[in-house]
Image (cartoon, rainbow, N blue to C red):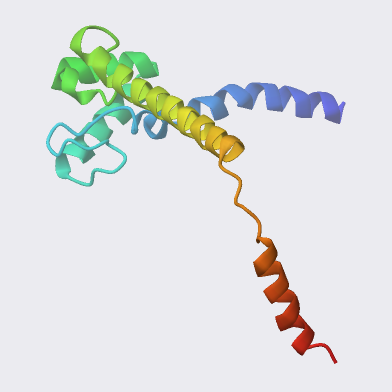
Length: 145
């Protein structure tokens, strides 16, 4: 009987615990402070505090994360979003870093292949000639005890 009551209590309080979780920490790195131009999580200004208060109020009203972001865009404009759009000129913000990383990887691969070929086909250094070996033997024999 106690187990049934405990399970029932857990089932009834689980939605309340889930509702207590604020969306603010999850959204702070995805929106910008319109005054200082930094993400909301790093901004300390009064405008950032007002924006956080708006997010908390909208969260308390039951709006989802995307709905809150839509409200922020309606209030502050498109520049409030930290992520650029995935169309038009803003697509370059996504494409340039990916292209740079790909080119860097290709460059590293080419450099590694060239280095390996140079090491594999490099000229062999000639060994000591007969005169050098004879002189080495004479010098070494002086140190033999």
